[in-house]
Image (cartoon, rainbow, N blue to C red; front, side, top):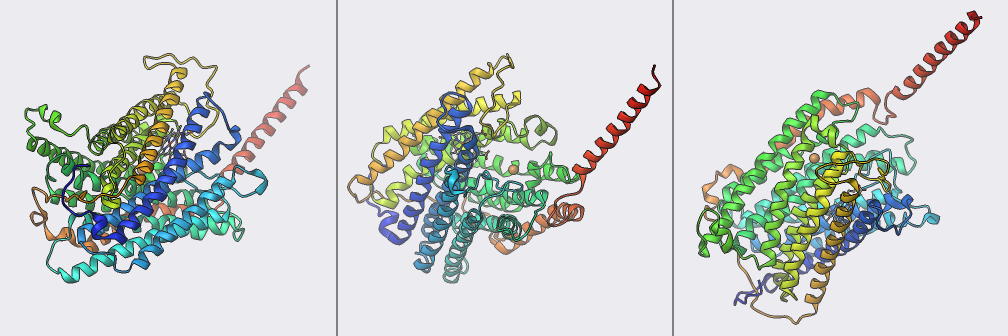
Length: 587
Ligand code: HEM
Ligand SMILES: [Cu+2]
């Protein structure tokens, strides 16, 4: 990482693209810092260790935490990384840098607007808020500016995709017969998935939530907006994950001292995500009434297929790293593990992130099972799960990737490698504590999204420890995580202050099995986009049709509630009459 080569860096070759990457990272890291601050506040609050905010503000905190981290941090990092990846792998600067600046500007404007509206929720007097959580579906309602900000942000990401597709088409003109370079392939397939996924959220926001919060329509159909949200809400997790995959496939083998094992396998994995990531969102709605069990079952089966690309990834990445270790002189069944560059924070961070992802995969399978989901639904288990996946597999990979990428985009080396190493290990340790305790607490039924999960009069005793002990684990884990993010951000800030150097450039080696070993049809973007849309129609046409047929486009959704109340009134009236009648005949 700090080893000098005489190669030019990405910044030397493409200064404008490097500047875009830096600016996107800057927004991502500001969001990370704020999000981590809210994270520790809520971890200490709900464990009753330290309370600095009234519990009434908890949703504001939670919304800020969720949106800043799961949406702003991850996606800004993604666009920065993709800007680097597409420029580097096609080996050409953006077609029109003003266009590139425009989408980054739109994304920044949109997220700043949404972010400010959320934070205004702390000041009651102003009367503007967006305490709707990062899932923002009805019946929770936000100020119109929140939805407007979100829209501008998403339009920005769409234009980013346009920019990258444009670069690719230009490249295609000059290279009609070549295979798409792997990183560009990954960027393009991920964006196809994003375009399909965001159809759901765009319809939900533009046709329902925004007009509703502006007062143009009186009601919305909550089940419809929930279903549209989850249409987007599941594939968005792959939008978080695929940049991590890009780093695991293309950068990590290099850091380990080797080469990617199989380029064709990597392509297959990305195509599988395009096809399989959208038609599964109903697996977040197993307990929603109004969706027939059969549709839920289909979503479950589709979800289980998604294990395949992740298992293929585990295989390919581990094989590539093992190859690297053996190149470095490692030997034996497991002995090669010792030959890996564990002192390199970029390597260790990514390796620990991958390990956590395996654990997250197991808890994800529990979530995905229609029957065992009932056990953990809406408990603290669920944030336990996604702090392993997006909170560690993705976040820690992004941090580790930054350590490798930073010199390439700034011509400066990382201020302190030992601190960086301590930082990634600390994140791993903090998350092991916090997330483990969240999973266990969830099995006890401790709810998520609440400031007051007291459970004081319950006396849970188990082999895992009491609820009190779990609370302490969450508090300690959360504190370690916060400290780790402070170390990450201050290390980068100090790196910014170091003098520029030359010769920090790195190259990425060719895979062992290259693109020519894969069928050409894999590069047919139109085909895969078409098939993915077809699968979406198959999975969603019937359930969406049924929801609208049942309770209309604008709800309010059947008459179950008053019918039940009327029913109870009738029963009590009859019962009361009978009692009175009986009383009358009694002496
Ligand atoms: C400093 C590190 C972090 C700490 C201490 C922390 C702590 C927490 C806690 C305690 C909750 C549960 C709150 C509740 O349900 O009552 C939570 C929720 C959540 N966290 Fe984190 N977290 C951290 C980092 C992250 C990261 C890096 C991400 C994603 C990139 C993330 C995404 C989320 C999301 C999406 C929620 C759910 C919000 C909701 O339910 O609406 N967190 N976090
Ligand atoms: Cu999901």
